[in-house]
Image (cartoon, rainbow, N blue to C red; front, side):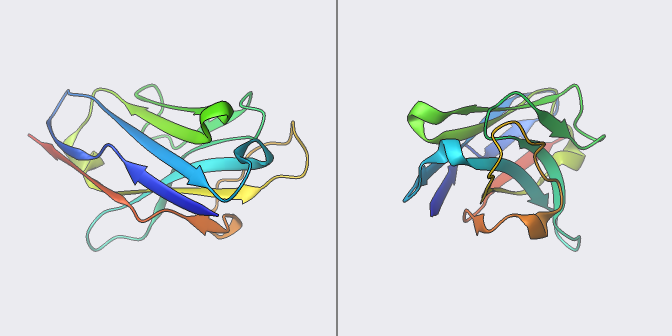
Length: 127
């Protein structure tokens, strides 16, 4: 499984960005997807996850109501729409997936549950 994250950049506070994660080497509808982020000097943290069916999503409290995770299995992609961005959202954002046997199961939140990771895309929010 290879993952290619894109869509990061520099944006002013209050702005929006949409991150994309394109998967290859797998049939994405068999995998749950997640986004994580890592700011300088901090550990990687969970941002959002979505199950393979797309019907269950989880969010970190810090992004709830501002970020939306979605997926397009036909495009083999997972997305993260980020609105009302804040300077504290500045980080490298990583997409990740893991094989999910049960279609309607809940998606995992701990990063160690995810077996495949993308290379990361930088998001910088200026105040």
